[in-house]
Length: 290
Ligand SMILES: C[S@@+](CC[C@H](N)C(=O)[O-])C[C@H]1O[C@@H](n2cnc3c(N)ncnc32)[C@H](O)[C@@H]1O
Image 1 (cartoon, protein in one colour):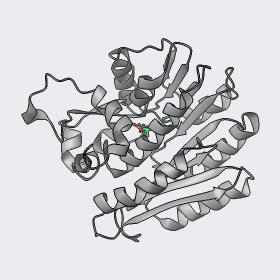
Image 2 (spheres, helix red, strand yellow):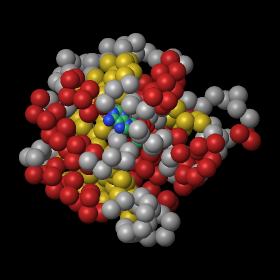
Image 3 (cartoon, protein in one colour):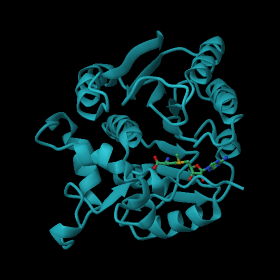
Image 4 (cartoon, helix red, strand yellow):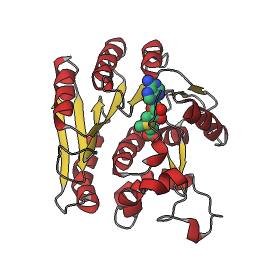
């Protein structure tokens, strides 16, 4: 039984980097009229109330989205536009956390971009989060009428969907890694997906709880022969052997050509702003060339 609930973590520093990259990729895909498919293998519940009991328990958003502003980060205008679009102006200021009441998850962010010609596939295995996701997505006014929410294993769903009929697509693989074999499984499934659809964009999120695990994951990915891979990682503290996530990142296969330059300017700034020890920790590199 899965115990991870993203509602405890929504809007934290890891979500910020993940969603900034996601916004950039979706924005890029919508620059052409040609249809694309968005596949979210680990969708979560879609929308998160920052005043919920879960969110208030750890208050992780206060060290993420809560420490950012459009004034300090004008380059994140599109990301802020998306995030704020899920917040209604009627909410009294006393209920707002840095101007927000709701933080959107990856399915809601994707829904913002999906057009009538596109398709979305959302997988969420936790029964309660699946039910919340269905309701949250139903409540959004979407231009795209082809968004499917499944209570199924996203790794298996991915295998069945590739290659997408449109031959354009973005796959987000964002597990909680509470099952340790997920570190290996992610690479296995991406590598086999890539064999069927090598022009697709893939985004893999990872947490740095134990650096050796991430080094092994990266080595396995590079050993699988995939090309055109970039990595964007943000840390809020130095690596540690103690329990807890100190950094997290996104590995992108076939990134939009604008992404690297954007992230190389943004990550040092974000690291400075969100660091808990006043030492910026970030990685911005090409893991495999085109
Ligand atoms: C990190 S959260 C997802 C957050 C979301 N992608 C976002 O950015 O807002 C991971 C989610 O994956 C779900 N999950 C875990 N294993 C799964 C699997 N094999 N298939 C589908 N969902 C799974 C968990 O219940 C959890 O809600």
